[in-house]
Image (cartoon, rainbow, N blue to C red; front, side, top):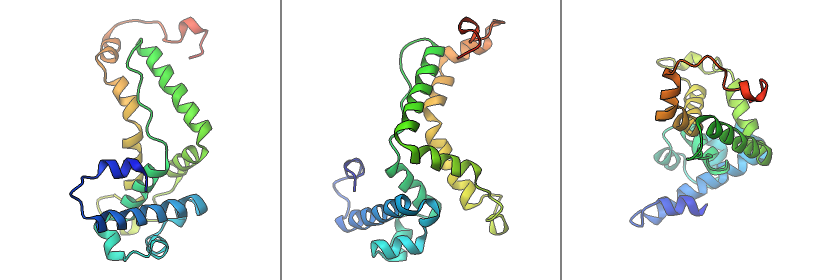
Length: 178
């Protein structure tokens, strides 16, 4: 298990709970690395981890929760937005940081692309309220990884820029290139 997860968990937690969660996430991460997202199934994770299915469901309400936790464990942490500079400079810096992340961790980009392109029609038949396991997972991943961009775009400076009446493009000074 990673030190990050261990540090986040309170000292009062039952060590058996921590041990079973660690085994489940480690098994899911190994399956993800070896066979991709489709390899991370409830059956495969319980078999690989040697943890009972009921215990898995005590930790994760559904397979989407397990997969989202596994992705968060395997992926690099989200890139925090820059705190200084103009709105444009902060956006450009964030995009550059994300680009570096994609270059250094191709699994990250591949998985995000897979989630974006994956059809929800496979699960639509048994879905309630239009929520399928795929759409729930997609929503969780998007909500998690959009935070840095939202932090910049919801800042007072961004709000002030959106209400100002400037007619020039933000890219005007760079000949159409941002």
